[in-house]
Each structure stands twice: as C-alpha cells, then as structure tokens.
Image (cartoon, rainbow, N blue to C red; front, side):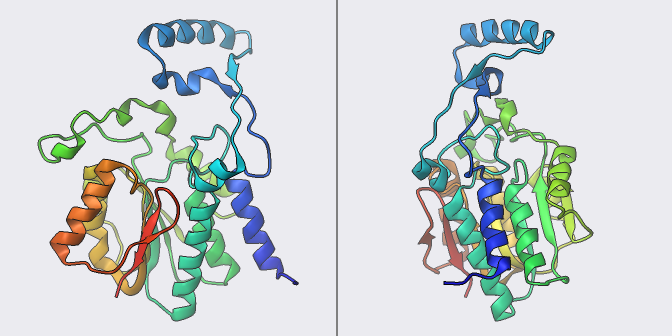
Length: 276
C-alpha cells in the first residue's frame, strides 16, 4: 500500500521523538540519583563531580523492550518525549480528527518535559497546512511544584519536585523545537506554575487539551481553567491516569462537572474522551 510522504514524515517523527529507532545508549548515573539511597547518592555525586572535570562519566546500561517503548513505560535518557508510540498515535488521531471535522480551537499540553509531544502537535498542523491554530506549551520549566497539602491533600508526601531529571528549561525546549524546524509564531510558551499561568492564558478556544501534570493539584488546575474552553467535538487527553493523584483529580472533576463522556483507554496510563 502506497503511503503519502506526509504520513511517512509523521511516522518517522514519532519514532525520532521517542528515540524508538535506536537502542538506548548508556545513561549518566547522576541523571537518576534520586532513585538511590542517600549514602549511595552522596558517593556517586562526589565521584561524578571528580570525573566530570576529566571529561569522563559513570554510566549505566539501560535496556528497554519495544513494548515498554511503545507504552511509554520508561524514563528515557535521550528521547524528546516519554509519551511512547501509542500515545503519540492517539495524539495524531485527535488532531487530525478535529482538523477534519472543523472543531474550533488551539492545542495545548500542560507539562511538556523536553517538548516532544508539543513538537509533534506543531508538526501535524504543519503537515495539514493549518496556519490559524496555535500550540500552547505550558510548563514551569523547573520541574514539578512542591505539594500544597493544605489545598490539595491528595498530594501530601509527593516528592517529584525533588527529581531534577523532570526539570527542563524553556531554552532547552525551544532549542528542541528549532532542531526539528518547528519553532514559529504559532508556538506559544506559558512559563510558570499552572495556578498562575492558566487563569490568564490568552486562550479563547481549544480543540485538543493534553494534560501531563502528574499531581492532583496540577491536574485540577489544568482542568478547571482549560476544560471549559474545550470546544464540543474536541479531545481531552490524560497522560497520567495510572497515577493515583492524577486519577483522583480527573474523577473528581468529571463528577463535579457532570461529565459523562466515556473515557477511552490508550495504553496502561493514557486515557481520553471526546467532549460532546
């Protein structure tokens, strides 16, 4: 079956963004210090610092199965997205459907890491010649927030703010857009905590809303401020539904707002629904 060059480009881009075309190279041990015990973390930090001065590194071999990559079950060292192929396929389906059906609105991801999913959003719009929709890139670019247990008790004890691997600067995300030739005036960065940036975001309508905030508070802030702007026929995509805090926030919001649209499963943690 013949495939259009546009389809081949998007397929290649998904595999490139997810680093699916290559075996995972060894990853510097210091990238995952937070997973180790305090004593080992201290020792490795000292040793890594010494070796860095000699331009050497301690690395750890990491082998991922194709299934784990497709499901986005790993924290990759070199990919531009953790999403995995199944969730990228779903994102493409949602974008192409709203374009085909003429559903009004821009696209947004809340929680972007290295920007891979947003880069792919911009690529799909470009392939279809869409010039009147923006891609909003919303992130603190400093990692996850400290839990506000007073306001969001479900986040009590969350330690993800202590993981520097999750903190990618705006400058680095912009560089990633440029590497793919996809940084232009239709890419809009919203830098800051969701509770501060989303209420005043210059967004009138959305057609695709993709949430990747992990925590209860981050997820609820995104839903409360953005879901009312999602057009009928648009898609709400949840990246972290396997996480208890995210799942609780989604379920609470849907119940509070009387949302009855069926949630469809993408993979082990990704779910979405179409707004009716």
